[in-house]
Length: 284
Image 1: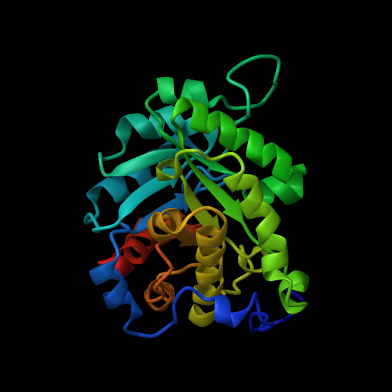
Image 2 (image 1 turned 60 degrees about the vertical axis):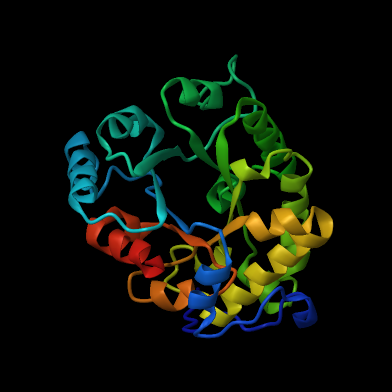
């Protein structure tokens, strides 16, 4: 992050197009008027819990199972190798989610994960298009769209991830970056009830930087406005949009106050059951 201690502050989209305003009372107002159930996911990435063994996987799952059950919907994303193990041991309120799928059900695609095979295993969720898939592995909006189209054809729930880099936010181009990503999603969705969008500013993922509650809410509102104008108002009203990017138990309550923030996609903090449950409880 180049020694920067504060998140970028450049404006995003037109403030006049915001779907709602941020306030400390927004959380209670949203819960009163909205039917959107908050949803929090834990992306374990390439981590076996807090170690590299089945024992550390089992320890984390047991700690989550033994914790209180928050009122929000929850999912956890272990590495592919451990999906079935976690599926067989996680409590019923913990949905198990893959970190990635391919756009084809089977074939000569070495190293890929089939959504069809996930469903056969009882796993009904997958992330798609995380920034690490885009930046490290070169995945494009076109491939993201193809994956979503296939997931839709088989009834798999997916969490497409979108986000901008630091220099794009500082140049005021956040929505210029997000709109093509959103378009790739909307072009391939027929059943929006199977979609949860995760907005993850790339500059905040794993850096310790976090968008301020005002920045996060404004971007979420702009995303919802775009969906309302380009898909439908009904879809926009019902669409759940998560925030991700250095979400911690110390900042989750403030972020959860945004009227258009419907949950979190949590990285490192999801590897510790007390912190993850505390984050989930921000929506209680």
